[in-house]
Every structure is written in C-alpha cells, then in structure tokens.
Image (cartoon, rainbow, N blue to C red):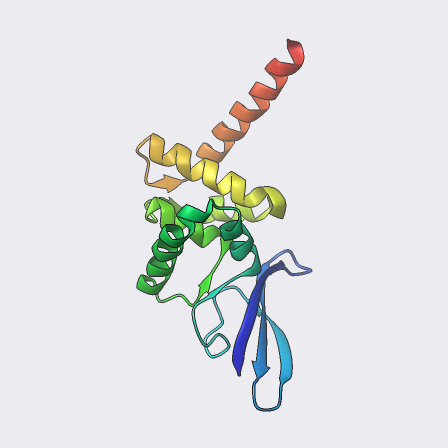
Length: 157
C-alpha cells in the first residue's frame, strides 16, 4: 500500500484523529482509515504532509518554501515522525522549546479547530518571550484575559 494523503480530523467524541488514504498500486484499490493521532505505524510508508499542513505551506512566500520544508522535514525526521501536521510546523519553528502541561493541552483541545493553531502559536510565543519553558493553564488564563480586555477597551472607545 502506498500512502496517498493524511487529513487531520476531529472525531465525534472531539478527539483529534488522522484519516489516512492509501492505494494498492497493482490493483489501484483505494482505502481510507481513521486512526488516533500518532498511531500510523505501518499505515504511512513515507514522510507525509497532512492536507492542512500542505495548505499552510502553500501560503508561505515561494522563496521561503524550500527553507521551511527543509526545517520541518528535518525536525520530523529527528523525532521519527512520518506525518507533518499544522502544529508540527510551529514546533519546528520554535525548536520545540516550549512544552505543554497536560491540563493546558487538554484545555487547548477544547478550543474550536479553526482557532486552535493560532491560539497555540500565541501561547507558545508568549511563553518564549517570558523565558518560560512550558504553557500552563495559568498562562492560558492570562493570555485569554489580555485578549478579552483588549476587546472591551476597543468597544469603549
């Protein structure tokens, strides 16, 4: 089986999953299967970019694509990962310097998918700017209050 693509999804229970599309080249039979994130051993035969990650790469200026691709793929190889996700791009860019407390990671999973990646980037950037090595629920609350506070000030003006 040859891996044709990987799509990032959210299950009915709200858990992140991957939909792996594969093809049997001799018979041209196409198969798709939902698997929990990170459990693709044997299903993905090479380094693959998820559809969301590829979309993000397509939005990068053309002159920066080769540099970003090399950075992210090298980072994935050092971590022995075969799937490059939207979030892995950010981890590669920060050097994976920021860890996440389990409670904060759980809370981030409750953030709506379209906003989740942006929230992750902002929280990690704030932690790095402060010299902190992890994102905590307290930091999440502080950043949330800062953004809601800014919105309230704009409404008063």
